[in-house]
Image 1: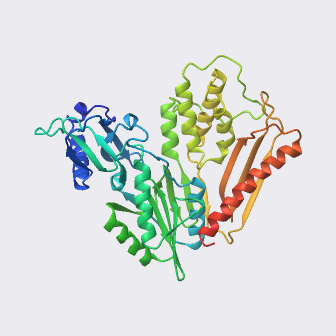
Image 2: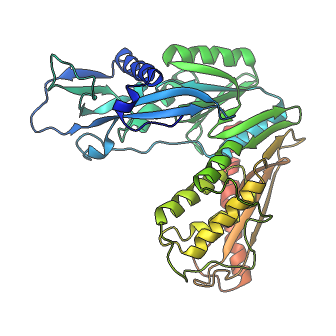
Image 3: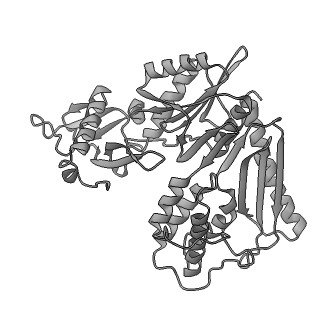
Length: 426
């Protein structure tokens, strides 16, 4: 079944009509707005319906989701929004926490906040048009004065994060200074870790009864669904076994191949030709948007696939003006992904939590700028936690200088990891 783009098409389907009614009920139940006369000389934000089909990790339909969203691009800075930044958890933080709790043998729970943004409180005065086909017939020219955030507003993620984090602080959690989306609760010999990514929550700790108590407190404050043991988070498929956890992105990778029309392509053994360096020579690729979209999707795939990190970094350097040769390099990566769909990242129990870090660099590897590329991998115990491949910002005049720059990069990452471990009470 295809996702719809127009309200009139959705109105013909009972599944989508039920989803629309659920959305309107959630908005009115949470007292998101107040219907008021349109003030003169005031910016009124538009509204529209967004329709999305949510899937399980196996590809089956989870639910039909209708969203009434504000057209945030019509907002005016300084009038109806100010700050917009909102923290999201780093992938490395997720891997660190999972590595620690697997080593300690803790269960990992997953929660989903229903209509998360609707819990955010607005500091600004925002007016929005009434939604299509849900206009109040007695006041057709009135507008909504928003009391709480709604999807699409520029400040909605920030308002939700501020509301949720403040609540966690009131019930005894502390916020990590190294990653603002990591919260820790420590009491006596018990400890709880909470990771937040927009409306997805991972909760784990050493005391199951204490975790249940906190889940109950969260459900009293927010509309929340307990999804049980962790199985699907940030687009990552999490498989639990006696050996530990396996993180993969099989469905996500398959979707990329379908989008690139390479799902029936012939697999290849390597993601790139090591001796071949990409340059800006050759004819321009006919559709930069397609190139940028596919490379962006591949960048997210590197969360569980360090084996393609260097190749993806190489093609990411030509997003502004991709050439035909660059797109051929992207297709090679995708053909490699096709043959390695079921590759995963293993997180197992370790006998220790010592940090092991390895770095390397080439020298003047870029034929156009003579800049070098740094790379590193970092382990905590036996588990791979962090990795990167990145072109250096300046030209190194010797191999030794290039290696020192790579060393500086990995030292900064290790220092950050130490801060995270300190916040985790390790």
